[in-house]
Image: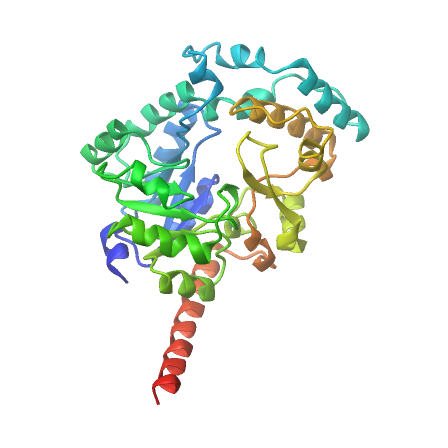
Length: 373
């Protein structure tokens, strides 16, 4: 147990991001810190999920991850009415972009569906709805609040601290640290190029020590492609005080990931992922699919800004899912997918990481002794 573990009240400095509450609870009870991503949830759903986690976890801490994008189409246009937000945003999607998506559906014989899917993905990536989600989170006392896109506003940090919560922020460049200097961030998460979802273009071997140096004493978690104890040892050697993981939980026993997608991930290599704007409008590492290839092709009309691209993605991939056209169904996953080769429980995953981490430290100690002999 290191200082970060003691500060957070956990046994191992292993943080697990997941959209599945069962994974979050299982990881926290196994000695790590489960963090629930709520971007696709309504405020009412967030309330239910947090209440459930409190009941399941008891005195064991968990975290909540809220996406707080600085630039969104609704913010730029002053759209603040959450009751009409989806319809207002829908009007901003050009006909050419819809026609391009429809052509892809036709190519794979995906029928026209009941029109509701786009409402699933847009709100959480908008500024106004994100604020409503945050209010739902603050209705509860939670140990850890994470901003999934950079540092949160100062007033959010101060409010979290007043409620007794620590605050984390994902960063993709050391320059991002300067933007939040003096705001009271408790831990930075250095999200490298290898990571799933929103990520920058700097690899972990460079990003982790650069962020550690820029953070100037604030703890740093290394994120991006980490799935084993050897990788955890490497991250700690680079100056991180813990690891932030995500993809490895997608194929866990507790995960709500569709079984067909799980089986697909177990066969994937790192080359089967792609960093693309085709899902959310920002660079996002995900499964390579005909959707990503089409939107990244020269024939594409271009990706829309957040959250408009997410509206298209949610609507059309939900159609593909309902039609059983699984080759069009993707989702965020990191390059560490090449290390995911069996379905295991969250407890097994934690223990394997910890055991391999200890074995790696022993091996490094023997190498040091050989070097100094």
